[in-house]
Length: 150
Image (cartoon, rainbow, N blue to C red; front, side, top):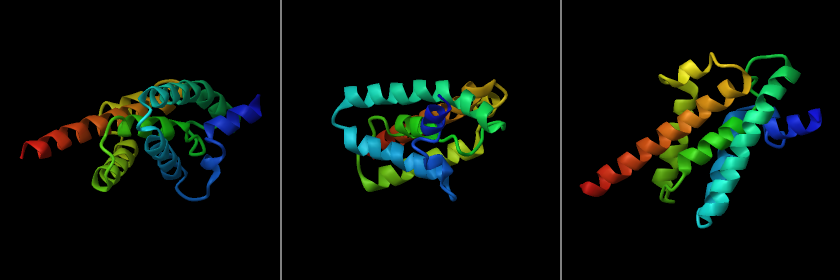
């Protein structure tokens, strides 16, 4: 069971990369969007599965590692960036802006995201990235509509 927890929490060992494992996992989540943007139902199902698994394995991995929110857990980034990209247009400026905006929201933990860090285990690990993804998506949707109004 521990091997499955490690495999999933690190998103197939991406979390063990020596540099920027969270960014690498975010890129993988973005690739899911590129691959599945035309199959909305499959994308939403995959997002649901990744998110559910993230809640399930994050707390267990935290216990295995013996540290709070260890950097090797990256399934949360995959889930969060999939939310960030949900139903965004696929063009280079939007993709790059959404990616970097998600990473910024994830790193800086703008209120109330910082409040989730006090929650127990998997909830804290997953929710900050889920909220960062929601913030990113809402910001991008608003920006796209504002630009379209010009």
